[in-house]
Amino acid sequence: MNITLKQLRVFCALYELRSFTAAARAAFVTQSAVSKLCAELEAEVGQPLFERSTRSVTPCDGAADFYAYAQEILGTVRAAERSMSGLRTLESGAVGVASSPMMMVGLLGDVIARYHRRYAGVKLELYELNTDDTLEHVRHGHADFGIVSTQTHGEGLEARVIYRDSMYAVCAPSHPLARRKTVRWPDLAAHDHITLRNVYSVRRAVDRISGELDLELHSGIEAGMLTSVLNLVRAGLGITIVPGYVCAFARLLGLHTAALQGGPERRHELWLIQRRSTRLSLAAKTFLDALESTLRAREASPDPTAFLDDRPINPDTE
Image (cartoon, rainbow, N blue to C red; front, top):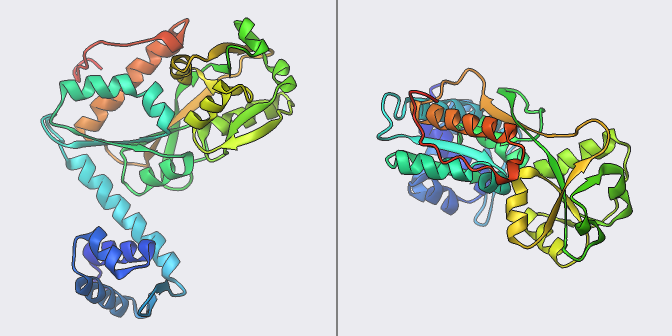
């Protein structure tokens, strides 16, 4: 088969968007070009990939499998493009990073700011996503690496622990726990909780730890964003459990944070996710080295919630 990357890109856009108009806009081509490229692709594979009507586009049998293969091919091409971009200098290129929104603020924010001031010519592509979407962005080559709190990463990816964070209980100033600097994990079962949905790393970490300790935490409210959870905590509707990197933001909202204790130390592990056997560009490697240096110092700090690293980034020493 003589299949082109342009055909694969148009096919993926049409498969995802189910519209010739939207696919043409996403692929920066005309609608007639989308139709022509899809017809050419169908001729190459020897079977129809879409059923077309005046109102809709429906994938045929086999299109889903072909889409998975197409994404794997395009992901490899994107990763190669990222690796070659800015390979020798830090005057250009791009770095793609995917993580949860609060990780982007609480863990990566200072590194991002220092890196951009030092290497303004490098484009930073930041993707604030849930855990599953972070994995997909790395797998498909949209991001150089991602940070999640799950070891399960699937085929084509590799993972290693990059940071271990302490866990904290967060409550309103009027809550009974606000009088305490530390709280035992078993004591949390006596209070109502506000939780994230389990597509986010924080919720999965809390579920894992509470399961290990055989704790049943009652949650009357489940939200999709940590900012929503913290605002509901501020309203006095319950408490929540967060890693240390969230505490600075929680304190800005006027909330009380208390370190969690009880039994063996339970820490929130964060994993660096990368495509297997992919070489990082100089721009991406420099960013990652700076991030790991910052996280090592933060993990070693007695109070990681107050840590701020303002050292200059130096690719020759980091």
